Image (tube, rainbow, N blue to C red; front, side):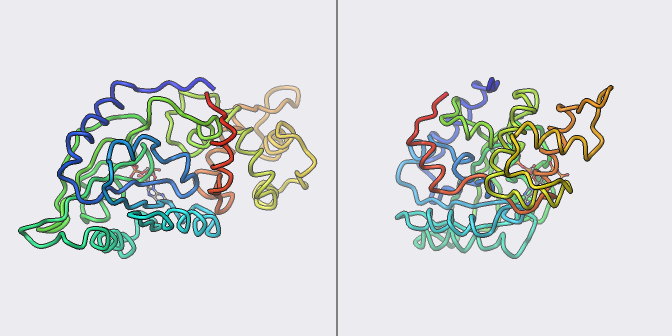
Length: 288
Ligand code: G4P
């Protein structure tokens, strides 16, 4: 899959993190709970050294709760790392994040030693929403097109708690082909950078194997277990009336329908990878 990256922007963000990191106590990485492995930055550990890390699995309201539990256990088993699940628009749970930072860096707090936290995450993961929820204001702009940069900024959450925001960051190269598809399906990658039909077919392939019942119920189609991915896409297109002339299905439009329904959570609460599956993809070395 051809994905157009924004290397200039990525390099600037990496540089900003490298310069800031010496004054940071906790690094928060915001992950998409539907694809925690694929939405994690493989270069973050290298950039942030041994700083304590908080993994925030955002959009957990859209993810499969059983899979979120697996991912939280996976991250919480690591030393110097904590993980929590969030829906960024919910105020009370967002405060958990502050408590988790204090647990990771107990020596920080008070005016003399304020907590200094760096927050990073890929575009569209919900960083602006979370910051708005935490600050109770509209300071951070939400709903940006994937890949648009903005300058690093310091946000004061309390007199003794500073949050350094970095621009949404993808990395120069996606290391596993499946991650590219999952990132595209989630909306992290600008829509002009990939083929929607190809991404929708990959998405349906995973859903067929893991959430067939949800797909059948949402689109009111017959059992899909024995169908090819293309046949499932066609069945959905027919059901939704996405037709060209002579009874042919408009596959492009159907692909958009499938992805929009997935992104909005209308198909159901879905996670596209478990820790085990993600480890297998890495081990299989499906490099692109
Ligand atoms: P970013 O700064 O990381 O790029 O992401 P941003 O906060 O702009 O969020 C991207 C989209 O994801 C927004 O939707 C936002 O409402 C949604 N979102 C963020 N956090 C959550 C969450 O925890 N759960 C759910 N369900 N959605 C979340 P949008 O349609 O692009 O914008 P809007 O119409 O909501 O303004």
